[in-house]
Amino acid sequence: MGLLIIAGGWGVLFGHLDQKLLFNLNTAQLDAVVASSLISQYRFLRAIEFGFGMMSFIFRKEIFRERLFNTLFLSTMSLGVVARGISLIIDGSPNGAFYFFAISELIGAIVIFLYSRTTLEPT
Image (cartoon, one colour):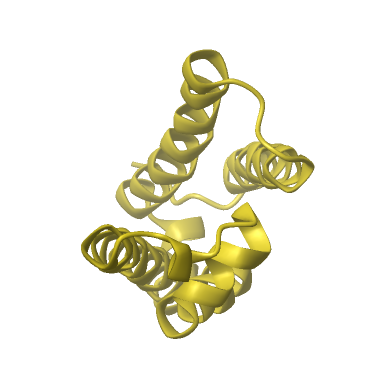
């Protein structure tokens, strides 16, 4: 949750710098319309990431207690891992940081799934 909040907020506020650090992309070298379109979409996606982190933090008790919240949370996390897998197959190998993110996200989803099996209220 914390990483989603921090990374999402960072990406919204520092989109151009984030592009440089994560992708080695200098957006100043792009056509102005392409750069603004790319950064606009990137900031939007990072805002969604931030929002998911905030929602997860606010509803953290419900995520571990109520099946609906748990399913939504784990489904969203798992879809992110699946999307990274699809990208690996279709787009090729990313830099090492993205492997770290994918593995961390997968482990997190598994650990939360297993732990929440002991905390969910009976239906």
